[in-house]
Image (cartoon, protein in one colour):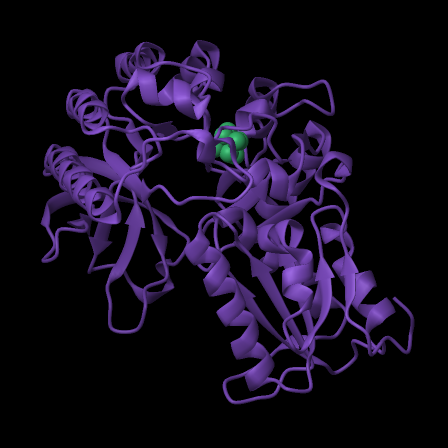
Length: 439
Ligand code: SF4
């Protein structure tokens, strides 16, 4: 950065759509801009720079991105507007056509946004920096504090799987990752800042090591040894990559929590085949059984998509029964959305929006039943909770090792980011947490 940097005394507005990875990346960029002299706009102020980090997981997400860009352009008419993220990689020209957009940054150049803003700040023409998906190689490191107590450490980006319904490999490129040494260094920095909990994120994190010849298991072991970090959570990991050795290691590790998030997508083998997923329901059931054998109280969240092309009523019934019998804690239910350019569009059978809604409701109800039963088992038990700063007028809350959300009304004000022992009591009013008291 030059001494007469364009960033001095500037104000920026940020808008992020989509997944945790996007939020982590925006936060890292915001931190870099802050260090360069840019502060975040306050309510009612005009920004000099607007950054929109987009998502393209569904058609609705695309529309929301365009709306967010239009809104920012309208509210900050003199700002330099930068758009990045998955939608920017997939539809750069479509975004460049939106009035007021100055810079469109695809996946390859995402790590250099600061330098790119500086370079193009004074240009009148909209700049589109886009590299075809196959050539995307760069890994932009990012470790950021979320809006809560947790930090998000991005260890991997991109995906080589090409599931038939998914556009992520086209938006984020091939699987690549940081080195274990560099990621351990980032975790050490979090510990030095006083951070206690890190969520390991990525697009297909079990595939970690493709570009460095390392493995996700080695990463887990190396991070577990970082002093000061007391908790790690592994975000979504593909079932075929969640090996016995990882599960067994987590069961006896110092800091990895008994908490898993595993995408199943469908509980019917025929649909899994249509989706080109790399496992069947037998493998999935085996993974869950193994986790429960060595960690009976582990929280297991499962992603499911309803209404994919080819999911007949009969197949959905099979999937429902499979999920019903599965010892998991929560279902994250998504309705299938048609994505241009995906292989799924070649499958004939289409599910109507009404039917997708019906299936989604059935699974959401099943999820509520499972979560409630899991929580109920914890009433009367003790646990360690990492307290999180409450919203105004609300009690402190936090999560146990195995991700039970608790509310701690008797926590003193200075207890944010502290680990405390609690005893869990009854459900709170809306059944989203257990009431707990410090012991
Ligand atoms: S594993 Fe499948 S669903 Fe997940 S990002 Fe890769 S292609 Fe998409």
